[in-house]
Image (cartoon, rainbow, N blue to C red):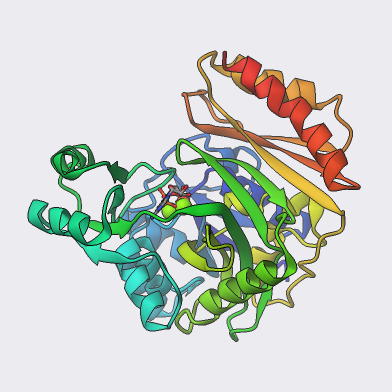
Length: 386
Ligand code: ATP
Ligand code: MG
Ligand code: MG
């Protein structure tokens, strides 16, 4: 299994954790990323990496020549060029260029999932101001204007408060292709990682709860504290979502969901065609991490067990704060005294406010012990950004 070389488009923290998993199995990885010392490149000495944008046709061609399999750690890539190298047969692309194209446009993604019968928040295409106002009339206020392409961490979303706010939303989102979505009254956000082999076989990780602050994931709790019936529904929704993707959709996928305030309805928010923040906990808490299972899936190797190996786990994101690197390092240093905690720092050059700089996983014997341990670190995080 260590004969094949994997090329990754994108060299951020997800790429770095993929490299960690691959290197343990002596699988070589080449990274395409514009940043010279990107997080993934720093820990892989298998040169040459390529210091070009992951949208560059020439760079994708070059990577394809050097690798057996191409995969992504970000969906905002050049799908036309990926499709070209895939068709030429010089390299396998997993997930396929078509799957990434489908998912990278959040509107096309919704159209596809709706056609497959999955339950989604109501949505409507929205190219003009008048269409946005009509969406407001139909959905009521607030509703959400969303960019179809290039969105992450909520950059690309605008919550429209009333009819007079529609124009402001259009201005903020700056002439991009948009769609409108009904605002969901949810009690929790849930997520599930699902891994799929080229044959279509899938394995599903436990249901977790994600907590977003300012649209950025702050905390993940595994397993989610929900009743068994909701757990079953969320597992089924996530499994169905990934199973219904087109042929060629292999690798790991993150499925984000809303648990509606009715307590029973689970709606799909969006899919990520790659490792996902809500699956970082799997490194310490599951028998096989999301990163290892992604490597296994794209190489078409048997999938690893997705079960939890600890009773309870949490993942705390460490973001750049007002105090730069001390906002990042203080909670990490504090966590060294907390039993069951593991620090991951991504090696990013600057700690801009809101930037994902690292994360801390905490494992525990019970939900009570977990919340005691997690609170100690979250308290330090709050102080570090004062
Ligand atoms: P990501 O970094 O997960 O890719 P994104 O930029 O694609 O984020 P979304 O997942 O669409 O953005 O939205 C970010 C967050 O905004 C969600 O996790 C949720 O908290 C909130 N949100 C999004 N859509 C809705 C909605 N229709 N109703 C209520 N809240 C929403
Ligand atoms: Mg997204
Ligand atoms: Mg999201």
